[in-house]
Every structure is written in structure tokens, then in C-alpha cells.
Amino acid sequence: MKHIQGKLTTWLLSVNEANSGYFNIQSKLFVKQENSRLLSFTWVILALSVIIFPVYSSASNGDDLVQAAHAGNLPKVRSLLMKGANINQIGSKGKTPLMASSGEGHMEVVKFLLDNGAKVNLQPKKSLTSLMLASLKGHTGIVHALLAKGAEVNHEAKGGFTALIFASLHGHTGIVDALLKKFAKVNQQSRDGFTALVFASQGGHGGAVKSLLDKGAEVNHQTKKAVTTALVLASEGGHGEIVKALLDNGAKIDHQTKKGYTALMKASAYGYTEIVLILMDRGANLNLKNIHGATAEKLARQPHITTILKAASATK
Image 1 (cartoon, helix red, strand yellow):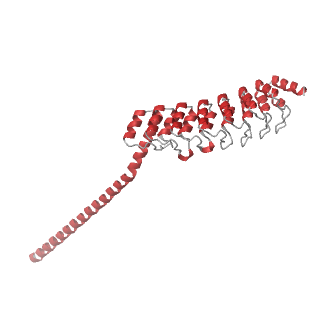
Image 2: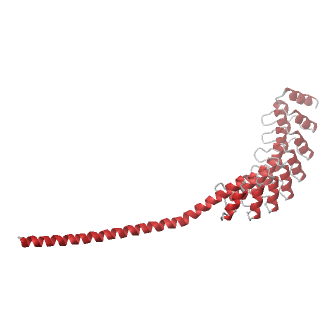
């Protein structure tokens, strides 16, 4: 019996040792596999960091530089460039540092960027160029600085707008003159057929109107949809001096828009007595009708204008 128990004990010990060895082997295999997985995961993280972090860093630095330029923070602009920021980086809002500083009127930043290689004519996705932004906002000094560095005056943004159109739209006469001296196309049209002269006349910007006319702007140009002219829009806006200037340069006094309106009808409807008298004195036709059959007299809202038109009609 003792002999049998001894053999059984010996067998159990051998099994236990075997199991112990097995579990030790399995444990080592498990550790090895986990180490292998951890190593693979580490390599993946490192690989992603190589790909992602430089892109993120570049985008972040680009935005930082654009924001510094937008704020006119020249020391920070210098610092970021010294740290390797791209001077022509396009920020998340589609602007370069030069575009941002030009639009905000930061002359020192603009000059610094231009002197350090900023590209003056960059135009991401047909956006507004640095010159367009400066022209739009009326930053005359910056416009001159950009032109001196070769800014292209006739670049078009979406919708066909140019620097000259933007400057004329807002009545920045000094900028209009500067652009015209650099051979800006005076009769360039927007997508809807508006020229610099049409916009300037509509806005009542007499100085810009004079400059454009002196450079040969087409006085009778018609827009595409409304088929209106500078004279009709100036009359509608009550801009008497511009009406005179346009007429002096050959504007057709009785031009009718797509809906049949003339300059006299617009001036009568909006109550601009001075312009009504100017147009009548220049021989405007009192009897023309719009598509609704209304004459200037019928469209007049103010009794004294109605009286003036009625009396004039009676004498003809």
C-alpha cells in the first residue's frame, strides 16, 4: 500500500512539475505577445506623430502668423517667422499674412512681409487679393506699397470684381486714381454687368466718377439683368452733380431699363426735384411710359413735382 502511495505521490509531483513548466511557458509566451503588441502600437503612434503633428504644427503656426498679421502685431510676426513659420501660409480662413494685414491697414506689417518675400499676388480659390482688400477698405498707402511690389491690378475675384471696382464702389478716389495709373481696366464688369462707373454713380462718389470718366469709362454701359445705367442709378439715388457729369459726358437721357424706367421717372418717383429740373432742362422725354403704362408725372409722389411735370407737358 505504501508502495502504491509512493508511486502515486511521485506521479502527482511529476504532473505538477509538468503543469508548472507548461504554465511558465504559457506565461512567457503571453508576456512576449503582449510586449510585441505594445511595441507594434508604439510604432504606430510614432508613425502617426510623424504624419500628423507636423501638419498640425504647420497649420497652427500658419494661423498664429495670420492672426498676428491681422492684429498688426509686428514683433510676433517677426518671432514666428524666425521660428520657421511660412510667410505665405494660407490660414484656416483662406488668407495669407499679407492679405490679413493689407485688409486691416497695418502698413508696418505689410512692408515687413513684402521686404521678406511675401507673395503679393496670391489668390486662394479666387478670393480677394491683398490689393483688393486694401482697395476695398480704403488703405491708400498700402495700395501704393503693393503696386510698387508688382501687385496685379486686373486680377478678378469671384463675381468678376476687381480692385478698381471695389475702390469705386466705396468711393476711394485716391485709390481709383492709383489703380488707373497702373492701367486698371476701366470698363471691367462684374458678373452682373456692373462697372466701376456704375457702382460709383450709384453710390454718389463724385470724385471717383470724374476720374473714371476722364479715363474713358463707358458712360452708357448697361447692366445685365436690370439693363440700367449709371445715369438712371444716379438719378434714383439723388446725386445731382453726378447726373450733370454723366450728361456732360454723353449719357443717354431717355434710356429705359428692362422695366421701362427712365432717369426722369426715377427722380420723380423718389422726389428729387433738383434732378427732375436738370433732366427736364436737358430735354428728357416727359411722355415715356414704363411697362406698367406710367409716365414720370404719374409716378411722382410729391405734389410739387407733379405740378412741375404737368405744367411742362402742357406747354409742349
